[in-house]
Length: 402
Image (cartoon, rainbow, N blue to C red; front, side, top):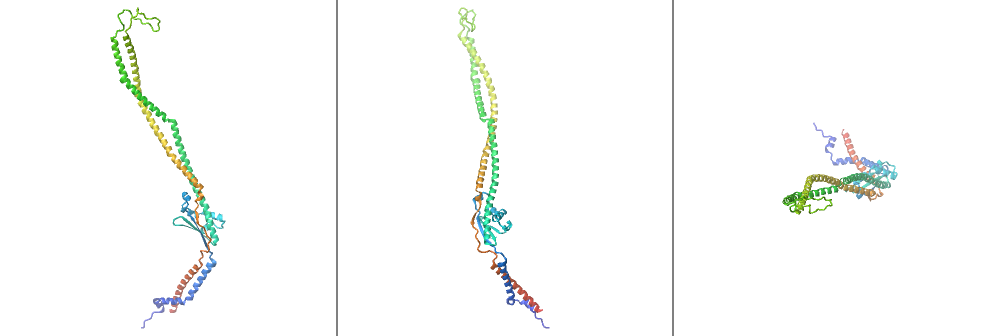
């Protein structure tokens, strides 16, 4: 029994090689060429006659503006503002464009440099002049809205600064009024003078009391005792006489005669006078000592009470003064912040980024790229044609074997 040789299909599957592939592709070369020609022609027609041209123009601005930094306008804010509705609407109004802000947004591309300093805006249009016009309109709208946005930002911060300044000034005025009212009511200098006076009075009273009790009164008591002893040893009259001494009244006009008056002992008289004056002085000094003792006993309590009140008042005044001194720099700081913002408000228009590269009139469209489109179409068509040729060759060979 003869063995059956493998059929053509099996040979195609098992023995296919590069030569057979090339032969199969070559046999279908006209099919592949027709697909490539058709694809290239179609791409050419679309690129040259159907697809509208697209021109691009770019403008670059420098975002490193000192005034903008002080206002808090960082590159991220400028990047967001570049394609915001307010800028796009301003473009439509400035250029009288027959476009919606959304369509304008589709015609703008924004890119920020790696160092976040340069912002590049690319505009797209179907004509070179329109692309350049859109770039110019964008910058005009961006400059206008960036200045307005800076004014709004500084106005908001200025309102806050004004409110803060008013609040701090009110607090400072209230603290100063409280300090003035305290000074006019308490009068610390008067209290301090009164305390010094009481202290001096106490020292003087203690000194006088010590002098009276330790020196004057004991001396008078000793003097009184000595006078009494001396007086007891002295006779009242000079010589022996039975007559009674008659002492005329002070206001009497009668004189004293030796016939009816006995002469007093001058020593006795002098001692009697010293005794009377010493007794009077001793009584007076003892009364003064009692009064001084009362004063010395009462003054310390008065002095301590006044000192305690004075300490409390001094602490209260120091607290009020600290509040005034603490609020004064805060008021100055708020006023300086307000003045800074007022200066920024006057210079807010200078916060607009400057143009680094003006938009140029494009010399050629960037799209459609006609030759590239035709080349891509031809390449894809050749690939499809080769694949199709192989499928067709496989299909035809299979049918012949059947």
